[in-house]
Image 1: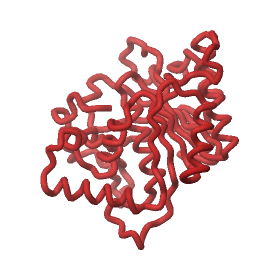
Image 2: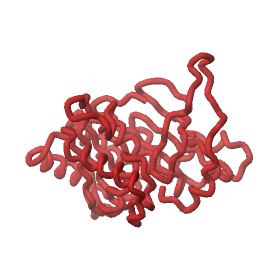
Image 3: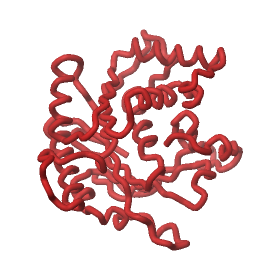
Image 4: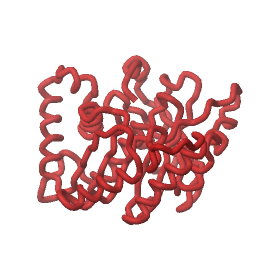
Length: 283
């Protein structure tokens, strides 16, 4: 998936499907690029400064989630301070990376956010701290219109919020990402019938005003599946298709599916059974 200045990528998923986890991994990749927490300061490669607007999740929770994603350490072990000596060392490396890495990562904890407020906060950050290169809003479904007194129907409101957010991104010429909750799926055994634009029919304006739309597939017993499937439903910058990632939900990570370079085929074997560890994990 290619993102250009002014583009808006929307992640669609059911409740608990992992929209925030997908967005967190997009932000991490955009921010760190080819760098890791073990990259020496003198060897840092180009990255991008990012701003996350956390509407639903308190700052401490989002920071812990991001720290788990960056370090690869279990979210709950960080939260409960039950780290081993090696894990403590890895967390220390992650924090040192955050402190020394020249690209900034700002988490803004704010409820009832509108696109106009997103723009005002970005202006303040640019004037006082750094120039944002990428924006994540978690998520459109709980954003407000710029006119908070508006009594528009929900389906109109969602489309207009998307348009207003995209306008902010286009004015600043930076890409952004957000999420939206999908409509209830059909009671069918054919999973493909639940993939596509019909799942966003509550407000087709969302698809009108976004550049790219990725849908998280939710299968029967999804919590026991080791992989996550992301369907590219709309893509103005390329083709459609499916992205398959391996879940490491205990540390809020999604990693690339291993590929056999000799045969150019996907390797489906030798994955750990994560069902027990994944039960009740934060998404």
